[in-house]
Length: 195
Image 1 (cartoon, rainbow, N blue to C red):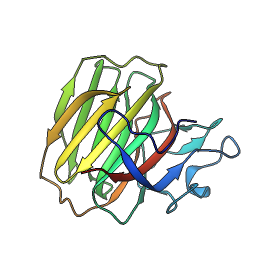
Image 2: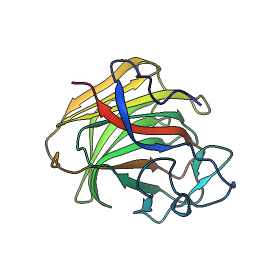
Image 3: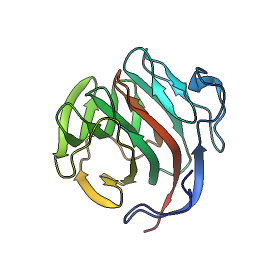
Image 4: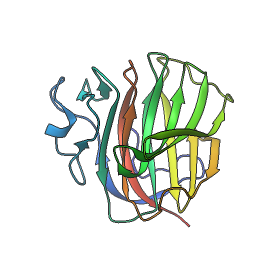
């Protein structure tokens, strides 16, 4: 497991408010497991995310699992392994099942990408093919959620930075967003950013 106190690129966490190492019996739904630190997960979509050998993966449909912390600005660090030629990544500023941002890997388009779901309407807000993601490759990802600016670093390299004020910055729910893919996540932590 990576050290949850180390920063990723320019993102440095100084205190963990949430930590999830996805340990437990393989096949267990993530909602049935308490995180190592923080508030329990809840599911907002029909898809299931299960434990699988120290990782979290989707089994049957698109999945959005969320939790929350008190601060509204934070950083997420995790291991991300895209798969299935689709999107694997993270959600932030989650208001409901149809209003949130996602950042991560879209291997069908060979892109690192950020999307806005606003009242059920999806919009691409940023993308790059720099260091294009590859199915089955594990990356260390860092997500910065600072006001209305959202950043994505991969293996310490800044890939995306986008400002978007469509959704209120008062929302502090975050989570995992996986299309129905072979992708997975491990060593997930959320902490305070250094400003």
